[in-house]
Each structure stands twice: as structure tokens, then as C-alpha cells.
Length: 148
Image (cartoon, rainbow, N blue to C red; front, top):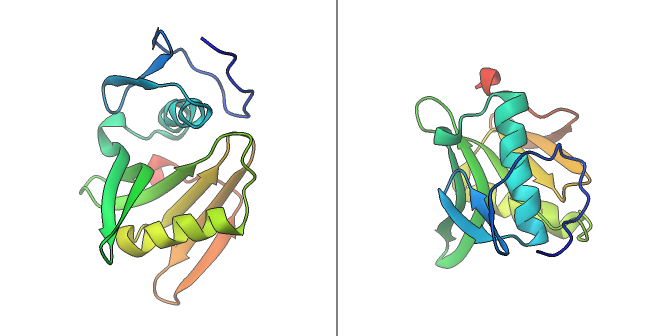
């Protein structure tokens, strides 16, 4: 297995099989790319520190907007099954920029969640959507599952 990148997310215990890491949400081994390393540690971080249930998360969900196909990294649902938080994970060597923000903004057109999180494992950008005023505001915290 190659060297895994350093990230600013607590590193949790993982099961590995050759170059693959076990995804607790999808319940299968997936290739452990730098982006996947960020995603898997973020999943555990959201569960252990923020109270999100793995059973209310989905990973790598495909959807369409105007016949164009997209894949969403992580989506967290509330108790009623409504989308609440969407997450876009990038490799640590990818800078978070306007294109990254545009990407998750496009995803939210379809998902209509209250919170958006973008991370490369080093930086975290979190936004809250207000559909009454049609505003998206950057916030300085990750919402907990109890806020759902």
C-alpha cells in the first residue's frame, strides 16, 4: 500500500485489503485513492464527533440534472429520510476554489439540502442554505446530527 496523504481529520481505524479500504456505508472495499482516504475518514469523523448515523448516509450517489449525470460523494439524511447535508470530498492536493464551490452548488440544485460541506481533508468550507431568501452563507462550523 502506498503512503496515505496527511489530512486534518482524525484518522480512524480502517480495514484494508491490498490497495482497497473498507467503506462502512457501502459495506464493501473500494480503491483507496487520496480522495477516498479523505472521504472514509470524514465519514467516521461525522459519525463519531457529530453524531451522524452511518445508516442515514449514502456515498457516491448518482443523479441527473438536465440529463447530465453527476456523482455525489456523501449525503446525510434526517430522520424522515430527507437530504440534510451534502459533502464534496477532494484529494488533499486539490485546492478548494470557485470551481469546487460551483460543483457542490450544482449538486444542491437537485438535492436541496440545508448544509453543504466541501473538504480536501486539509481545509473545510461549510455553507448553510436559506431557501426563503435564496441565500447561501458560509458558516464556521459543521452542523451536528442533533441539529437535524
